[in-house]
Figure 1 (tube, rainbow, N blue to C red):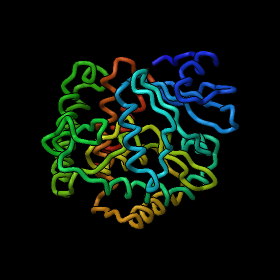
Figure 2 (figure 1 turned 180 degrees about the vertical axis):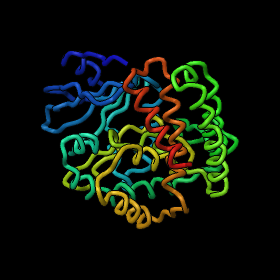
Figure 3 (figure 1 turned 180 degrees about the horizontal axis):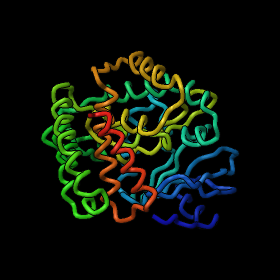
Figure 4 (figure 1 turned 135 degrees about the horizontal axis):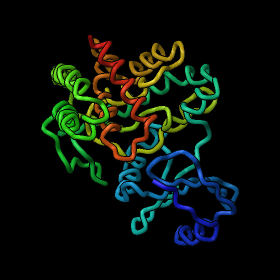
Length: 304
């Protein structure tokens, strides 16, 4: 979506019920579905003004998650939440995204944070639910799925039948995905774990790193009840630095997580859903389409 352009006066008008005053504001380039401003507040502190565009209801969900996980997971605190106008003021956290660090060649700092990234994912996965599905603002499952595997791979099957996906991927690639999807659904069902809290977008753009430590997990609007393996597929979607995987695995185990045999490949196969979902979006550009198809091809080649 296009960013919402606001003047400093308009921002302070939004902030007036909170009694915060912004001395300066800068539009942040990150984010594809919402608008974020870095605020320099009059008291000398900093914060983020987040305007919810894709899903206004996500504001309440992110507030509830910050309240639930605060102290256990590095989630920015929600300093102010306006339910009527669907925006929030969120704590500013020091650091750079994993994506930016990798683009700058700072691979060692990313590898240093891998233990934290794995441990944090294990802690998030300890929040369990009776059912898989979408969450409401009270962190209750409001749109239940038959099971984690059926919810994820059932939706993948649905997407593979869409004309736009067929046109972009080609019928042959769609046919090749189906048996891999069916086998992955069975493997996920065989793990037989209860549904857990899933960030939904646990990837390099949403992981903030400061001095080799994970300083924040950002943007929880896609959170749901499902499998932590989705997050693994997202974090390993693209190449990671040498040593990252071993440290991630050690951190996940330290956090109390258990890694089943073949966890890396199953995570890749679950991530097929995200890749095909990209292909189903009208707004996807040629680079995104080509990148998604390349990842799908790589996953299928590993699956044999």
